[in-house]
Image 1 (tube, rainbow, N blue to C red):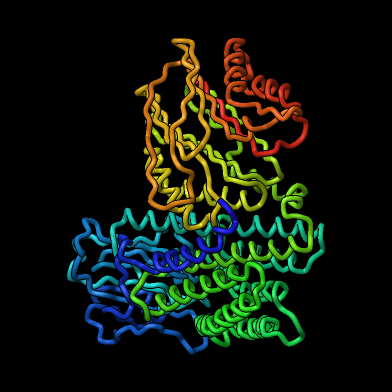
Image 2: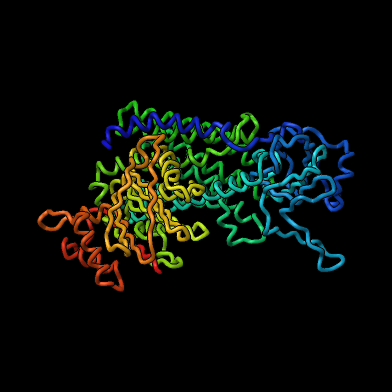
Length: 640
């Protein structure tokens, strides 16, 4: 696709993405706003120890809940009981509440039945001792509501030790437990993927800084690394190191939350700022002072953490608006690709504002979009910064050849080794043309002796292709429910990549094999053919399903072809970097030479078929260094 089409596509896709991200009618949940029927009252330590729902049902101390509730008092170990009368299952066979946000709670009750506990109070070691509180390692924030709960109060007993009170959390979601567990998994995967993505960008940027010593690169390193750590703290990543408390993850979340606007504004200042008194520079310097003061007051318990965060949020919204104004000024000044700044800053403001207003109850919507606003913003800043650096440096592609660190990280998105599946020998060869490449592959065992293999190739090379390859992996895992349906899988991946690939398309083939039935299905999105050696008839068949590449047009469907196989059959998958490599006479290696090499390898019954195929390839091309395009080869041998 020509680069001239990139900007119009971005402009068209941006409002569509923002609209879909904030539109909730397609979600299988119902938001239960705290202001709709919820009541609350505070509990003392003694009342918590003897909490009984039957007595609480008669309490007149409960009052209607108002959004947002923010305690202006000095934070103390304070407990809060929230209740709502459960009247209607809304047609769900197994209704449940998904509890979200940064709050923590002891227990949830329905009548006298305890439904769930996040923290447990253990018996004291000594009769006069204090009961220790420990984290329930089996806790999942899905509160299932049995039929016996109808017309009864559901109680949730919250607590806060310098964290957040009830009112600042996102409202619960009402729905089916299966959908809630999927929502938790998808949220964790999204935040973890974004976290590692930003860390990859940070490491890559730091390597470039070591080579070029530019302040913009150092600022971007700081910005990306802090953002990555922030998203990992929301995915539960740091819970791997802290089993008995959420407090360390919460502290990491708070510190990075306050550092993100500082690092973002500093990078924005290095990128577009000029003059001594430019507004971006004054903003990040003010944020530094504000963060030091407000966090000191919060961590010394002079003010509550809720007051600190609420003040932070209302300060950040005007800052985001100022960023949009600065971005528009760059576009009015006709700076190259300044539209990327406008799109990125606008996405960050719109999607964050949507989630903030939803959390505070001003919008009847489910907050879930801010992380994508952040992603769009970072990608747009990356592309805009790349354009500026290219004007003063050697071409962007030349820099990629020196990025050893980024190459190691790129390898991390690929399977560390071929899987060892029963009655299958699999070998893989992968060589990028640069230190970071655009090829991607994955293997999935689907149960019942069914397996899936994906091989994909992003157009182009270097960092841009590697970013889209990372998005391809994310899209592949987002569409996990279609792993047994090749055509549906590629359609789902296409819809995801159309929104995020910024004009770069991806070719792919998905191979689904059923060892019990002796059949395999395959769908292709513009990817090269693959070879099937039939041991019974001693013939090599070239299979090339047709389909358009991923990430160009929405609404595409893909054909699905089914074939049979026998024991001792073999398959060879590859990307076009293999067949398009040329020798010194400018002759391509080609599919015919690859097929001949494959047949020779099978005839000689090579112990290492991949090594023989590569030997023939290197003999023809004379390739001694990096290829002109990324090369991926997958060999599959069905054992008897």
